[in-house]
Image (cartoon, rainbow, N blue to C red):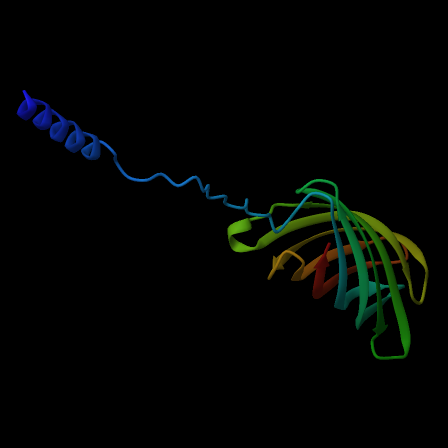
Length: 176
């Protein structure tokens, strides 16, 4: 009987260790969600170089200059913007100022860090003559990081007093 009990104890001890399995860690792996490059509630500040070409005030105009702008996106796809461009006209010492306000629609492609966009709006243009105007255009926004990128766009400006020109901008964009 002693032999039987001893054999039974050895079998139970062997069986218990064979069913023990591997140790389970209580640590959990947490993966941070990927933050979108283009976000709702985003404020952007632009600094850019600009060129204008076309007709204004009854004559042909070409100009180069720069400006500043600010945009705010209510959603990931829709926002508003305002920018002011100052440039010289035909190298003759006259200046040209274009203050524009726009509705902006964009389509972010996160995997490419790129957001094509379209804008439509209006504003005022000062130069040899002052007037209100309308505009429509397209552009591209490329992000290096969540807060730094580059952009380029071109818009068609139209209005009375013979305003019929393109305004092309390229520059840095800072997003907050």
